[in-house]
Each structure stands twice: as C-alpha cells, then as structure tokens.
View 1 (cartoon, rainbow, N blue to C red):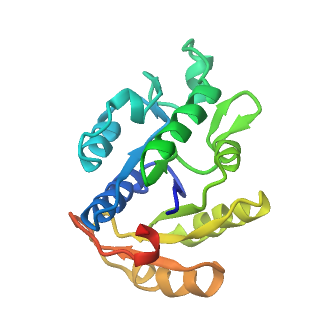
View 2 (cartoon, rainbow, N blue to C red):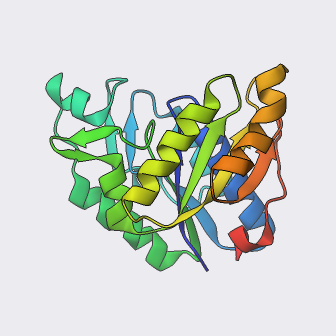
Length: 211
C-alpha cells in the first residue's frame, strides 16, 4: 500500500477537492485511507472537508497539526507574528497517521515551493516524507508552464513522481482547456492519472493508486 503527497501548481488549483476524491475512492474500495494536511493557513475549511472524506475517523488536529490563522504562506505567517511552523511535529504526525492507516494522502499548502520556515519550503517537507508525489493542475490557460515548472522541480529534487491530475475546476471551455491534457501528456514525462470534470462528487482513479 502506497502513501502519497498531493501538491499543486498554485493556490486554488483544487488540491483539497482532488485529495478528498482520492480518499473517498480509496475508502469506497475498502482501503483504510485518510487525508492529512500538515500545514493550514487561514480558515480550517479544507481540513474539515478532508476529515469528512476520511469518515471522521481522526480529529482535525490529528489531520492538521500546524494551523496558522493568517491566510498566507507559513513563513509569511511567522513574519506577521505567528509562531514558526513546527516542521518536526508535522512530519511526526503524518508519519504516525501512516503507521495506523493503510493509506494516507497528504495534501500540501499552496504550490510546491511555498516557504514554510526560513530556508525550508514545502518541497523540502515532501522530500523528507519521501512519498510519491501527485501534482494537481488546474486546467486553464497558463497551466502548461506552471505544471512543467513544478514537475521539473520535483524531479530535480529526486522525489518520486507518481503523475498528474488535471482539474477542470470551473467547467468552462476554451482552446487551452481542450488541448492541455494532450500537450501535458507529450511533455510532462509522467502519467496523466485522471482528468476531473467540474463538480464531480466521486471519481474512478487507476486501481494502482488505491492499493
């Protein structure tokens, strides 16, 4: 059974939505799966959604050990006067979840290189965790550049890359959205795991993700 780190090309690309779909699909396949969000900034709505997708088998604090009140990157929250994010605690909590559950989908905060504390970003956290990375890409004009830069950074750090999930978040249609999947498949060098339509409440993912 594999655990996964879910990152995205930017804030608001749909990481929580996709992570919840992954957890619900795994649990629907009778896998003991939960979501984790080690760092949360601003309202805790995303954590509540992940807790619900996980069947409320864990408390919010167990899924989200570092909660910062400002809606900004964790390092920016620290500059604004909040406590520095406790990276060691976050790692320990996520690993402890993985010791008690068959599968954990760990959602990052913002994009791949979001600063967590001085000299340490989310990519460093993912590298310490060592889990294969799933990249959520919001399907829109500009997605190709953001996606390929993110994938390049993941590979340069030597972190295992599982693949890409393309999220059609707004349900609109244009030339870029109709072609992004094909172009990404040509250039990204990793599998396109799924393309999600706007508003889906469930999704069938490749079986290999849920075993």
